[in-house]
Image 1 (cartoon, rainbow, N blue to C red):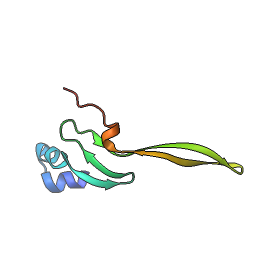
Image 2: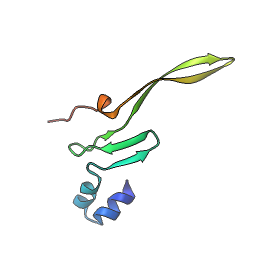
Image 3: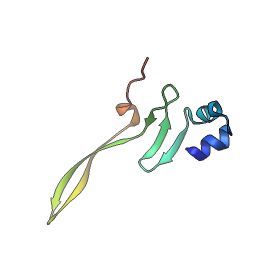
Length: 76
């Protein structure tokens, strides 16, 4: 994010902010978007349970939630 902000906005803070608003990129959890209205990072969320397999507990994916399902409301 810092690289994009500097490459697109130079040393102008407002330009850096504009460079990130609405930007979508691939992150560790999948596609991430920086919401323009409030700069919230919208990303997929995962529900998982732990199941015992032998003597270990391993995570098991239950559901993947789209960013729109888990996005916080935009403050007015």
